[in-house]
Amino acid sequence: MRCSAARRLLVAYQDEELAPSDAARVAEHLHHCAACAAAEAELSSVTPEPLRLAMPDWSQLDAALDAAWEHAPPALPAPANSVGRRFPYAIGLYALAVGLLVAWGVHNHQRANELQVALTAAQIAPPPAVPMSATALQPASFKPPADDGKPR
Image 1 (tube, one colour):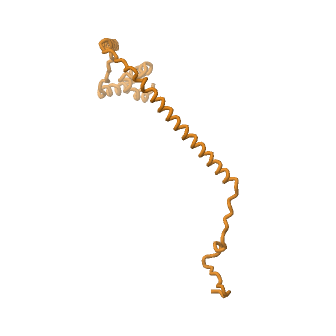
Image 2 (cartoon, one colour; image 1 turned 60 degrees about the vertical axis):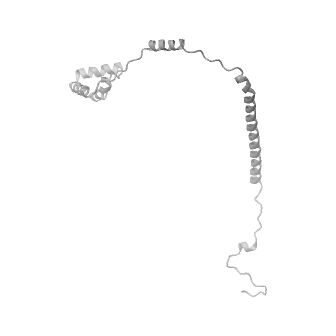
Image 3 (cartoon, one colour; image 1 turned 90 degrees about the vertical axis):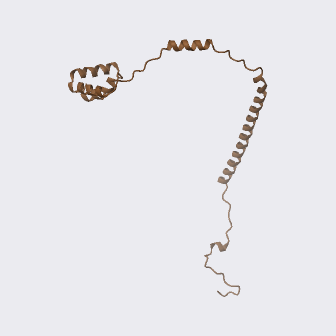
């Protein structure tokens, strides 16, 4: 292992976060390289001890949960006919909502068909001829002759 690779892994090595194979390679390098061993010693004097979180004792937690279940009050029964009385209303509201959605869909479908027919007719039919008056083609400075035939 090269010194640059070993030095990049020093913090993880000290925190015991490396895989066992990588930790063994870093330890072997530190055993043979005095410069990296000195860098590791300096780093360990500056870096605080890593936190070691204790794993919880699951058996105690299971026992506490079991005890809590044993002393829990019984569940209350569901009120009689609470669902049965609301069921027809729910079905009615559902039917109303479905009916409104179907009516809205039919209306939109008819409107889309009407627009499609109008668009198709507009694309097939030639544009209507717009009659233009002769004055629309004359320049704005044009002054028509007087009724007596003399120019103004």
